[in-house]
Structure formats: C-alpha cells, structure tokens
Image (cartoon, rainbow, N blue to C red; front, side, top):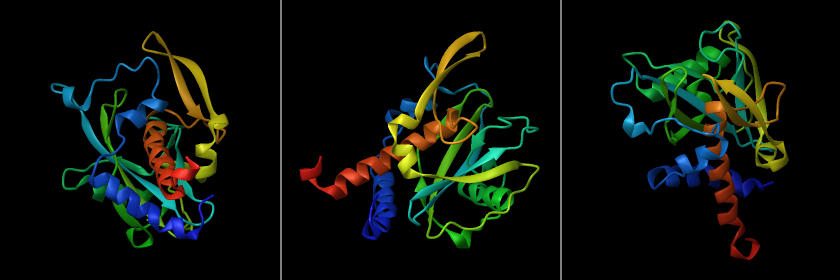
Length: 221
C-alpha cells in the first residue's frame, strides 16, 4: 500500500491527467458487458438522453478507499444496484453542482468535507438513457455518513487493495433485451459491483495503477 507521501500526490496526479488525457474508453471497456453495443458519446444524436452526475469520494485515510451506495430497491432506475452518490441534473445546475447536491442528500457528506479534483470520462447508460458525469473528490479521514433511506439502502467503503485484486473480478451471464451478455463485476459486496459503476471504477483503478507505476520508478516495473 502507498505510504503517506503518496497520498497527497495521487490527487495531483489525477488533476494533471484530467487536464492532459484520461484513459477513458480504454479503461471503461475492461468492465463493460460483452458484447458492448453502446453507441459512442459522439453518436447520440436523436436519442432522448438525460444528464446526470455522480461523486466518487476517495478517502486518503489508510487504506485508501472509495464510497459506494446501494440504491433503494424501489427506485425506478437501477434499484438495488451499487452506485456512487449522484442523480439527475436539474435544469439550473451544472454537473458538478448536481454531484455535490446529491451526495449531501443521499449520504449526508457536504462539500466542505472534500475537495473536488475534476471530472472523469462521461459514460452513456442505455437502459436509463443517462449520460453520467463522474466527479472525483478527495477527503482525508472517511467522513461519517447518514443515508437518506428513500434513495439509498446502504453506504459502504471499498479499499483500493480490493479493487486492484484481480481475483475479486468475476463474470456472470445475464439476458438483456433477448441477448445474452457477459457482465464482469467486482465481488466486494453481497451485491455485484458491475455496470456503469464498475466502468467508472475501472477508470479510477487504471489511474491509481498508473500512478503507482510512476511513483515506484522504472526499476520496479
């Protein structure tokens, strides 16, 4: 696990990479259902897409970890699934404001408790027609959470050690619109961490992995 001197460096690495070039589809594709027939973000003309935003809250407390939620099973879209705090963008909001508002509402964590570094690669989710804008934010100690039970049934942290562990990645075959798809997922909870949340997570894991390679030096590659 990284030592303390790496903790402050990772947010800087993310900020630098966001300004330069994110891994994007290359990273997301690792956890995408196969075959993946989703259209590119540049080819969504004529589709009734909707904007949404999530907040990836990354704790620099040892061990480094990310906050996830389990959505209330009664919700219309993705009920009972693992997600990040977030939701639909309101007309008068920016995606960043949406991510912050939804995080405060769903898990009781407010903007003064974290620092937003930037937005990772957007992702299109066909079942709900949402284009998700994932904002990554860093905090020191893991803040206490207070869930809004109408939206969220549980909030929990997953360590980066678990997300880097290839043995935690498994697959499951499921039918979607009369087609059989293979879904990769992280086996880190009783609910599989898959779908759009896994694809967003995959970009974070790629950033983290590349960062560790950079700071470890070429002699350890």
